[in-house]
Amino acid sequence: MTPERWEQVKEVLYEALQREPEERSSFIARACEEDVSLRSEVQTLLSSYEQAGSALEKPPRELAMELLAKERLDQLIGQSIGQYRLVSLLGAGGMGEVFLAEDTRLGRKVALKLLPARFTQNTERLRRFQQEARSASALNHPHILTIYDFGRVGSTHYIASEFVEGETLRQLVSRETLPVPTVLEIASQVASALNVAHEAGIVHRDIKPENLMLRRDGYAKV
Amino acid sequence: MKTVSPNEVSQLLADWSNGDRASLDKLMPLVYAELHDIASRYMRRERAGHTLQTTGLVNEAYLKLVDQRNTRWQNRAHFFAIAAQIMRRILVDHARKRRYAKRGAGAHQVSFDEGALACAEIGAELVALDDALNSLASIAPQQSRIVEIRYFGGLTVRETAQVLGLSVDKVKREWTTAKAWLHHEMSNH
Image (cartoon, rainbow over the protein chains, first blue to last red):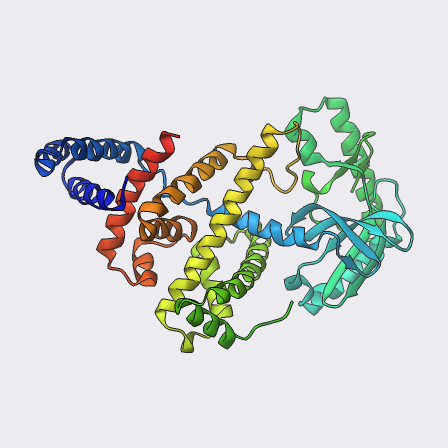
């Protein structure tokens, strides 16, 4: 279609759309007079319009936001924070993003959590968090994630902990239904971990499938 | 990253409105970085029950980057046009990559979220829309831009009219007929 033709089609089409649906076809016939091809072009687009419904009314806003957010995180891959080199993004949540990172001093893999700025700007909250990290790092339990390090580079606060090769309980249950014995096994591992934490005066406050890691051999980590 | 003062951003917008293509090359990464920043901040907050619309996102970036006292509304339009372009590119690139990955060798992992990104239908539609918008641009560039700003920039008819300096009626007319044209184009390819 040429630009001039489209202008013509647009004119008639828009006028037609201002009318009641049952009057549209006869309006188009009158407006196009002898021009049969114009008439058929407008008629085709009219039915396209009617089929389209609300197709373009809802922009993929959330998707755009997610992609934007993710792209920024991807830019961090390969960069270093102190002795840690970021390898890949493991997950993102309310408490910050978790990356798989390499501790270049010890040559081992770690899970590196970067705390969000809004969190670390609150001194009281940060102090409490550091306190908890300190107590948690003192815990020694096979089902509690071992904390290696807690620190700051520039304005970025991070926590380095043991990297568990596996998936979250959420990922597992969204894929398959677990047999009861497996569920009990996981629950009892988690309970024993929480018991040890509670005895040390630490309350997790956010136990959920997203926060429980399962190793490939079924070993659970809180 | 080097920070740029709101005054400089206003100047770049003005230069671009006056036809200086090089200033767009300087603006693009600035706007991009700001949108990234705001989006990732909001994505975290969203889980605590806050949501942000694209319009809000772009507005926030605008307020942060641009010196409003020294910026004319025409330049504001240019800013929204850039943001819409960025949104379009990011969505379409993602959709194309996903399609490519799906056709390519099997399992690729989507680890970041289980929600919107997994929706393959949106992806195919986005790719078709992008192609259709490109053809529309060849016969009616302004109309194509209106759709881009409305759809990808998330602006209402009224806001679109405002930023482009057009009447509300004109935008309504262009938007309505573009929908018919695009739907026809997308269902025939």
